[in-house]
Image (cartoon, rainbow, N blue to C red; front, side, top):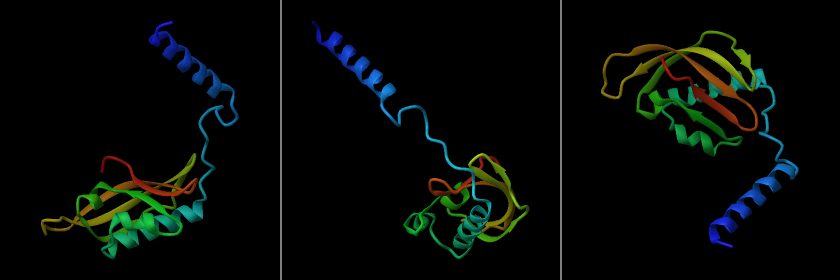
Length: 133
């Protein structure tokens, strides 16, 4: 038997085994978003940015917060923010509209942007800015 045939049989066996083992019945689903916790987490993340904190420091918190915002990553400073709504639960996330007043890293004039954040509470706290805006 060639090594190619043995490799194919081994791969087929592994796939079949994964299909019958407990926990392999499909992707795990996050629990519905905890709205109050999501709002609190969004405000804490934005306050951290406004105070000059680094986005990576959020991962060291207890509980950990995973955040993503390309304005922040690019070095823009957050001068002010205003959460414009109470948010809308969408599956495992809360979508919140936020007005940001940003200071460009080159020291230019402040820029206002209205963006949406998706905030999750399970299995970890997450704050991700939607692309666009």
